[in-house]
Length: 430
Image (tube, rainbow, N blue to C red; front, side, top):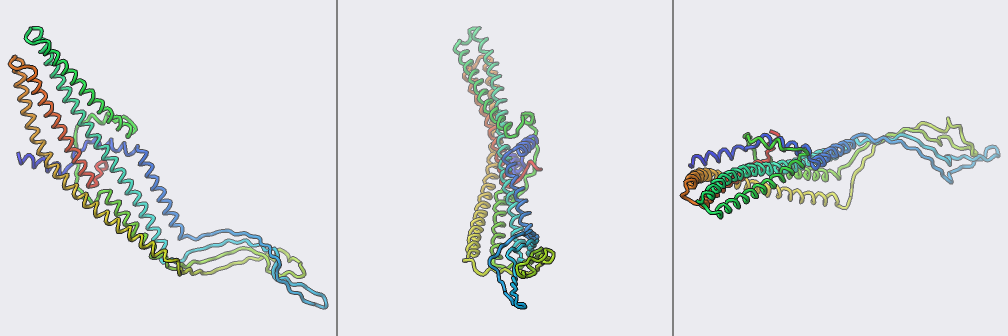
């Protein structure tokens, strides 16, 4: 007995019984889910944000054109040969057009850190999608096992209904022979109707669950509910692969990168500036005469370096860095708490499997005894040595024992799923 229980526990603890069709159902639901598709657009947005951040290392080129009217402008009057001449150094109408390029040459790694932060944020988005995917997959798996449980319950109830019908025929014959009263026949007919009602209620619950899966999958999944063959999947893994822990790790990495960005916020930036264009005003105006365009408009260029050094910003960067450090401490505490909670749930789950394995072994013995007792009672009922009510008691005991066995098996299946979920195992990808 103890060896049998130990063997069952080893099987439960090291492998998960997952139906091949369950994997197909989960894949179908995950592929169809509009909610997951909506979340996945966040990855595309994150990719674009990363490209935008990367573009800051590229030069900025722009085109400028302007017209400026100045009044008054500086003028000088000369007497040349007794004739006054007016020399105007700048025209009233100034035309300027040029191309300007601005390129950051060195920023002490600020943009590189911001780029890494953007990639980490996209990684966090992917982890969040994995969390939602895992929750949905295991929700579907739980419902699937509940459906299989209800299907087996219906089979047991229908088998019980068949036995009641056969007994009803015997009672009917005995009533005709005068061996039993019509009251006995009325009693078994009521029992027959009650059993039919139980079956209809179970089937209603079963159909509701199947309809839910059909809705989630976007198609009829009934063909995938016929196969009862179970495949053992290796459940090796650790709680470090749990999506919740991975999400907290991703959040911690982003906060650390943001701290690094804030530490660099006071670093200087060196940029190169270049421009090329055309403007007027190269020749002065004498007595208001406008020079020819070809002489007045000239090509002009400019090259330069610009050093920007932040000096004072009211300690905003320092204060923001402190906030980030507090947030990082909070995330680390959440990670420690989540890790401890998952470890506890893992130990409790494994202990529950030991208990369920024990109950399963005992329940198998109970069913054997119930079947044997029912066969004896049925034989005595046929011979007329016991009454219908006594046979019904044995019949109820057998049905309850069989239903209890299915319930234990459901609990085992759900507990196995819970252990896989704690370890973050994506059985639908194996």
